[in-house]
Amino acid sequence: MSLRIKSILYIASISLIFLSCSQSAQPTDNGKIKVVCTTGMIEDALINSLDTNFSISALMGPGVDPHLYKATPKDLQLLRAADVIVYNGLHLEGKLHEVFNKLSKTKHLIAVADGIAKDKLRSGDEMSYDPHIWFDVMLWSNAVEYCSYSIRQLYPEFTNSIKPKTNAYLDSLKLLNDEIKAYLNQNLNSDKRILITAHDAFGYFGQAYEFKVLAIKGMSTVSDVNLKHVNELSKLIIQKRIRTIFPETSLPEGNVGGIVEACNKLDHPLKLGSALYSDALGLSNTGKGTYVGMFRYNVKSIVEGLKDE
Ligand SMILES: [Zn+2]
Picture 1: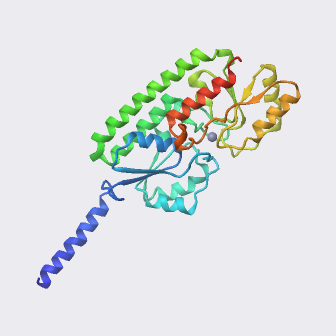
Picture 2 (picture 1 turned 180 degrees about the horizontal axis):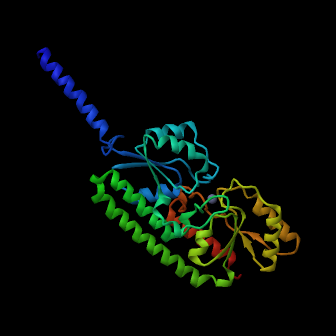
Picture 3 (picture 1 turned 180 degrees about the vertical axis):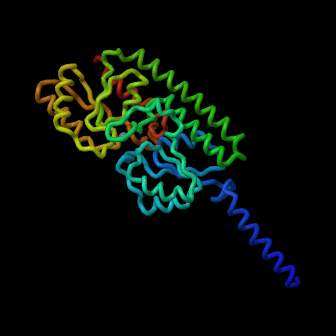
């Protein structure tokens, strides 16, 4: 082979490498596009919306509190290698804000909460909006739909496989919403629908499924417990004869247990309900490792705790 032909082939191969690097829509990891997300709820939405051209991983596993979560060196490696990063937004991942800011210069970032109209969001206490959008199934559907749409915009060549899968999942979420409403109507009278949890994560749940919702901590677990607020809450529990309050799997039980003890000392038979999955899903082999499984478990546990004995 002449030197001239060798040079032409070399230049052609270099050009091909540059060409493939510049096309972000091409799969980059064992033929798969790497999507890294923050919470298990988002991971489950992606698994149910995207096709096998995408590899999906989440930073936060069961029992992890996203409000307090800081990126580990391994997370940073994972995020830097990602093609797309998907997060909740509305300051849920408050400690990752700076990391996302830096990555946004070179990566595609999607905040699923951007798919929800601002007038559907609850106003927050210390934050601008309540980030726990997954607790109204129909609101979460909007976020899932927006996330799928955003990824289709980035990778339009997979639209034909992603869109029907997403639509089928959205249909199943609509059925879940109907099922939850019917189950609650059959099993829990409206006067029993007072839900008290460790932190204020169930506000959207209360709006969607007609519960009065109260919590020991605010919308972010970063906030301290206010003693005056705890005393008022205890008085209300006794006055309304509330039988059960609920710890959460991603928070220490201490504060909820303290109220139970205080009420019991005042001869009010308050007990701890099953720990609810608030800001993280359960283990994958327990039936609570999916969004649908988590939701059903929470609703069943709430009904068990609050219904008449
Ligand atoms: Zn929370």
